[in-house]
Amino acid sequence: MTDLNIAEIAALAGLSFVIAFSVLWAISVFYPRKTASARAIINGADQDIVFVFDEDQLIDATPPARKLLQTAESETGRSDWDKLIALLSPRFPTISQDAAALFEKGKIKIVAADENDDSWVDIEWWDNLARVSIIQSVSHDERSLMDGPSVNAMTDELGILRSVVNSVPYLMWKQDDEQNITWANKAYTDLAIEHSEPSTAGNWPIKSLFETLPALLEDDGRRVWRASLQKSNNETLNWFEIESFRHGDQMLFSATGIDATIRAEQSLRDFVQTLSKTFAQLPTGLAIFNQKRQLVLFNPALLNLVGLSAEFLSIRPTLFAFLDKLREKQMVPEPKDYRSWQQQISDLEAAAIDGTYAEIWNLPSGLTYRVTGRPHPGGGVAFLFEDISAEVSLTRRFRSQLDQGQAVIDSMGEAIIVFASNGMVALSNQAYKKLWALETERPVVEVNAQEALAHWEAMLKPSENLLNIRAFISQTGNRSALSMELALNTGPVLKCRLEPIQGGATLVGFTETQAHFTPKQSIAL
Image 1 (cartoon, one colour):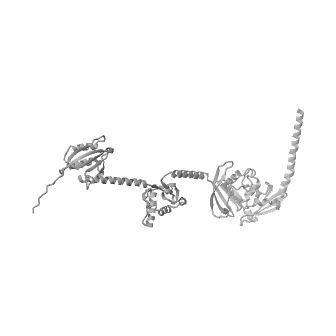
Image 2 (cartoon, helix red, strand yellow):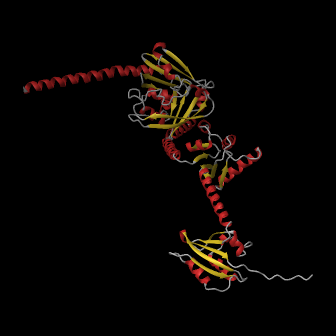
Image 3 (cartoon, helix red, strand yellow):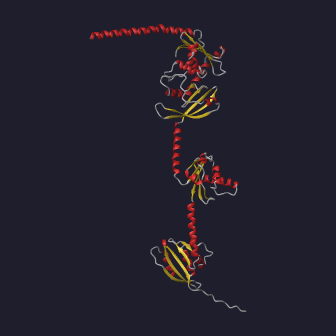
């Protein structure tokens, strides 16, 4: 069994030797033949730009051709043919499609896309090899002027420009009118390879990442729009802002990543939506106008309060149009004329910007609105509409009851004054003002108990009862009603009663019990 294994191993070794020898023999026979054939193809063209390809591999090239190919971008997995196509595509956009027909036609001439460029590319089929010749539109004398330092300087400049374009963090590419990619920088190429199938990654023309509208290619002006790409094996989208403009007979594009901007805008929309849901629950009508005085936000309560349609508010009317529509609906106080109405709008806007606008609108319908204007971030203004009709009605009813109560006590003959628990005068009647000669004095409600007692003492004869009155008014606990007499300096006697009332207040009433008669003088006839 061991001898058999040794024999098998020896046989396999012999077979491997034969295969290796056959491969080396084939290379030694056929490759020099192809190399010799390629050399014969470019014989005598050492000063011209000539390439020889076996499918997509470069077999031979003239020195100027090799120098030209060195300026092409070097990327892993990219063939020499793809490098040359990428290098020539900006001047010859159709070279990739035209070269595909070489096997059938045998010889192809491709002219430059630029009408002012007289250069062309000849591709010929020679002995199963492709000979690519780049014919420059310069004479021999002109070509000699471009040799040496001039060519080196141009090559260095080209290298610098290529390095700059490939270092920028955004995508750049060119397309012809048929939306074929004719040139792209490294950022675009890397992203295109990432989004391509492994079998086609790196092939030229490179994959088009963004859909371009035909109308855009016909437009000579700059255009800006947004587009998205879905990450491989991921549902997340990458967003780009794309800018384009015509460059010769092609379009030059640049795309900048705006994922952060998209996220910020989405956060802003979510925030505005949250605010809108919050504002939707408010009974107060809200209308926010931006810096251009266009309506940007409103809540459902505004529709109910001002009676405007959602369709009208959705078209983002201006502040003037909004208020003018309210005027048509008789939802604003009616001005005297249209000119005064325009001035009223200007004053309203100016006051809202300063944050000082706050008015009560008494509408012809009988409703009463409180309208408040406040400045809004970004130069905008916000208006709040509150229906205070019930509040105003209650206030008016309360005021009416107060006036009615005042009229009742004014009709009484007894002089009455009421002190609140803090010692301030709460109310008094006309009889009190007349008794104590207060017709020309300041309002009684602005007087406190100490001042009132001082005024009484000045008009009354000295009495201990004044001390009792002072003590009764200053007490805050449980009290019993008191009654006493006081005498005016002028003679009449007053009956004074003190009654504790709700809330710690005190009612003091004065009634004149003895009339004062002044003797009449007789008149001599």
